[in-house]
Image 1 (cartoon, rainbow, N blue to C red):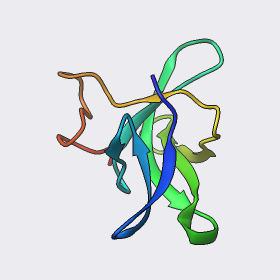
Image 2: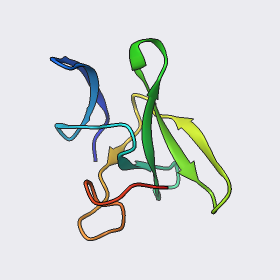
Image 3: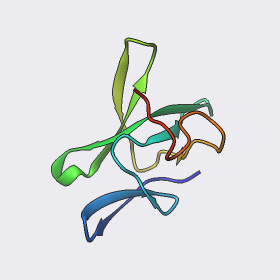
Image 4: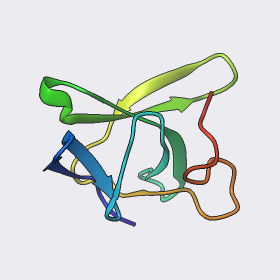
Length: 91
């Protein structure tokens, strides 16, 4: 588990998770207060794109953006799971 870090790169500001760059549309998971994990699609907003957000689908038709806070615990999907880094994205 880790949190997002925000740093400048040659290509501009970017978030990183476990030392890997996080790109718009990447699937990541956030730990909920009850300890469960919720999967969503990463995005950025706010001034200079510093505000991180996660788009979570509740069902086939409904979803919402939630802010990723500095203290939130995040992770990449585990190997072999749908949405594993680099294999697929939430539609």
